[in-house]
Length: 105
Image (cartoon, rainbow, N blue to C red; front, side):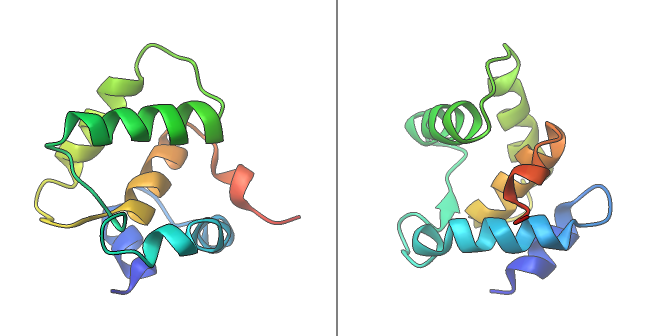
């Protein structure tokens, strides 16, 4: 799978390729495993993990709209049966203006 092309397909604006590269490096191990490579939007426990581990722990967010944003990303990607975790995370980080966390300085 060409992850950069997938992000470009779903991103609402030009892709921050430096942030994408940092994200791809950070999540290389996760993306290498078949059981963690994709986000299952129909699985409530999976969406809770995205909220707790990525949005709260990694991005440091605490806002009340986290679940609504996750659902919006699920809806945005609904035509893809396999929702790449890297694309999903990129879209969330983009939404919250947190892509700079993944740019190596």
